Length: 613
Image (cartoon, rainbow, N blue to C red; front, side, top):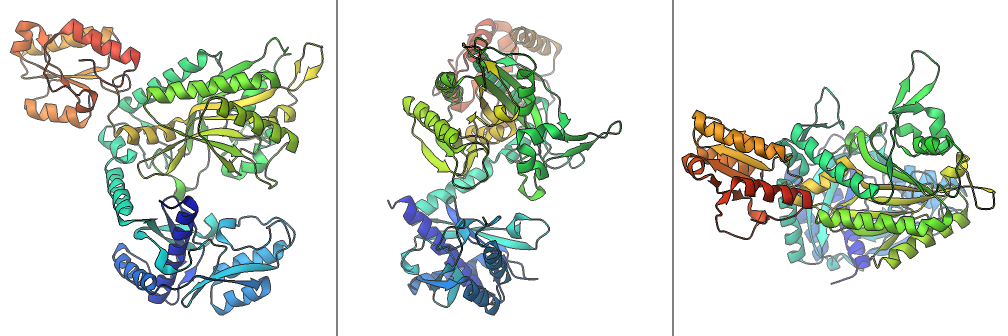
């Protein structure tokens, strides 16, 4: 197995091979950028009025294989900025010319909106740029910093997967290009496994399951990115939030409530407005001249609650939690089911503590994350998101160094495997990101504790220490699920819609074999007993065959299905059908109604992942 650097070089090389194949088929092609991504690569392409379709993939792949077979070397060269601009003009590559002109104009100033993964830069972007790098294979030359393999013949197995629209540099005011995606692996076997998983992922996509299981919907009249949850889907939200609150209450959190709008000034003081204000939804008051914002996050609100009275070191740590919906004006092209929405419900929380209390508070949060995700049988990766050397962060460098060391020490003391991602920190502090992967291998950030030395200073938060001196508290942001919508996208796919008993929207379904009064009466007696134990139970007394009723219960992935007929009425015993993933036993069990209800109740309360029947 080759290392990750080799895989990146291989996928980057394939992006160039794909671009050179496209240029042979469409000589008028104009190219944007072509970076590597998880499991593969893409290239942004402008073909004017020509549209690439799935049917074209065969010809593009055929041309790519010719290039690979010819084993063309990847040749590195350098050009001055001016020479590179001349090259872009002569090659009729306006997008490359735009990037190069931006670099030239930047001089010694930091370049914005340019991803260093997409440009070959000899010197740092922060220093004056004299030269850029190019790679050539065959007749194809591209502005690029690499890395690449030695030759085209060294790449592994690949396949083109999809074509999508993408605005140049992510701005909807720019031209729309065609983004051609491919996946690549070392061997044909790895590629086959990935493609098989991809097909599996289509069947268990949370959007598909959300519709089939009647969990949520997107109404065009309500708006894109604003999901509506049905009664069944709301069960998932409520039960998960209840558990999240239960775990946090155990370590001292208390509930607060804040409104859904606030003055813009609040976010100007916190520093959020300067960084993200263009991504938010504004509200105009008809009664005042206040500029209002639909709440995009909760931390400034919680800080105002802290600031409402004098605090002593004896009061700390103070812990607030709130499950509330925030709003962000996400781009329409980036919205995706529950994974990316405009209404974001967070199980959010904040700790105000002294520096000496950070270690204990972070340790408690890591344990809460462990318990929550162990209960859900979800494995998470740990990413330490630290700052890089750019100027996008607030606060003093020494505080950042101190905070990053504290986070690293806590994670290591918990013996967690982790990796460091420089540049992924929040603008106000470093964080521990717990990452899940969906069925396609894409990363989804879920739980996140974040240290913040910056915002408490900006809001002038204080407490009196044991010497009577005023000090600034440290703030720890924490969300256990993060966005409940994004969490559900990951969890629905993780379980493939087969939720454990404690989370199942419908835990038991009673099926009548006929519509006689005696049968329905008996079923309703069981229903009322179960409801008395807070079980979620439904009766199917429809005029369908028993087989169709059972099949419908299976399609809804109900954990327990019970058929009610004359035999059950006479004996007072039932024979539950157990969903196959909850038990290894093939044996049918006759059980009394009270005992069955007690077992299901116990499984629900204990949050068991399997049936005890």
